[in-house]
Length: 108
Image (cartoon, rainbow, N blue to C red; front, side, top):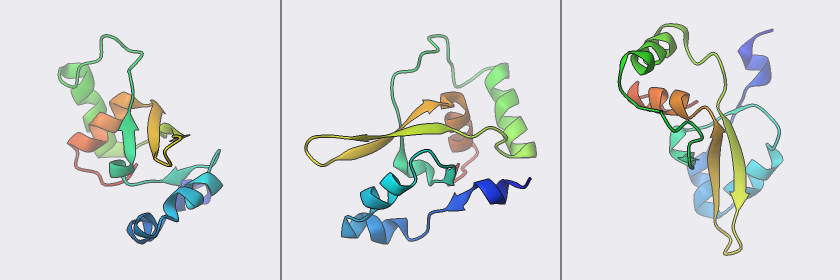
């Protein structure tokens, strides 16, 4: 089945963010596959202590994404803070996140 069937495009995020409705929309997408601008994702502590964003393994990942696209989704958790703030923290796919950034991709 095509990626499009499982992927929803979030449109108008900037307008929603400015109006304060973005968090509400994100809550509705919990446990769903969505395409998000990388600018909305944050990185927490990496469980891979030996991760380096350089070297042949990382470059192979970058080239794979350049050639084939992102074949495995990033996983992010919506974390809400007591002060009303929030973040979308990548919980799986930190290397893929950095590879997408290196390629200048806007969405993952």
